[in-house]
Image (cartoon, rainbow, N blue to C red; front, side, top):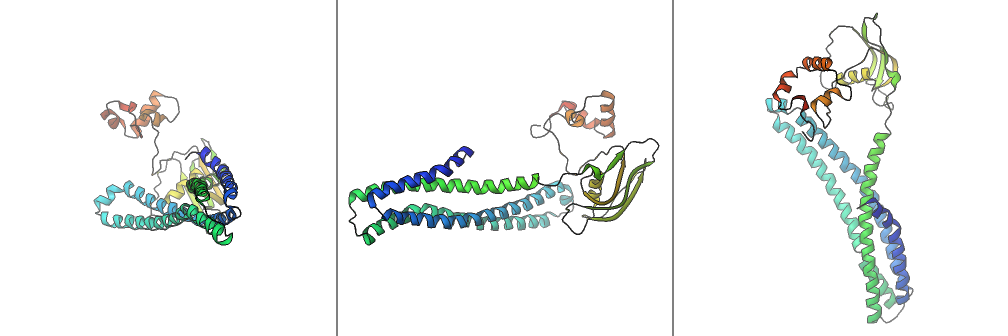
Length: 329
């Protein structure tokens, strides 16, 4: 369903319903207001149901994100998992996350079915309300002409309510997706002042962190790093090791200026080259990925390829560094 269709449905369907009720009033008189009351009641119930559907949809998205994150981590370390015969353990973990996702999906679709059922039975309930009021309250004879004319109008009303269901479902899913995008766009930007970068031939210091306090979330009362001190001299090889979740990658993020600095000073001599655990490649040639938009310098390019031990790998490819990689490669 396109955006233009959804927007036009929002104003067109209410107008169509009002026209149907006006025409229905010509046949059954004040009994048409009984149908209007039923429509309003169903709309109120569906409005409450739609709010619950939106909340449940967010839970479904969260459960799906957890499962996909676990799968990405599994495939990223599949060699270690196979080597240590951990398949059953990780399969149980993924199955548990999938079951959690299925449970939230079951609740979500159950609420959706209640919403759809109420919407699809609107015409039947309105018809019963109109004819019952016309015969039992107004004490008017229900002739064949009035019955079939009214049912024709109410049949068109069913078409309108069906469009409302499809439109409202699309709007709920769109709202959840738009909110997720909004949350990402509203994240705090990296502050360039987090890291002081200088270029000096006389300095022997490569990295210096003095009394640093850093956090990923400014609202978190407990910073990830407190009173951090680190000094690395130029030409010095530094290895940071530790258990999983001890902050090794976060330390690299500090040098990149990606963590929020609460106190302290971070000084980096020259520029920083960073190789992430999760590489990102462009859908282009190997050469263009290495250059990354910079002009081609044959000597520098050859030195980089040699330093990264890529010469033998490129030689094994039919097109060499002109080989396409990524989704099209």
